[in-house]
Length: 96
Image (cartoon, rainbow, N blue to C red; front, top):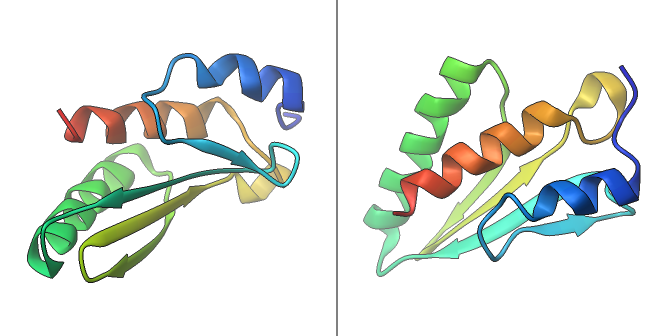
């Protein structure tokens, strides 16, 4: 499997909620979410972790006071794949 081209990745962005960004010529999909406190951010990160385990596709998470940063890429192909966008859409569902 080959990674998505920047044009293919940009097309997939229309399926996601606002806030997601393509980084490094569509090598990485990233989003930062804000929360009222550390406990809320941690609870959200744990929910993301549960989905990631179910999907077998694991994002890089950074958790701080009132924020969670998410970075997605498919390391095996050194770029973005359909799996990254599927996981991003499932993370979007957690925000609703």
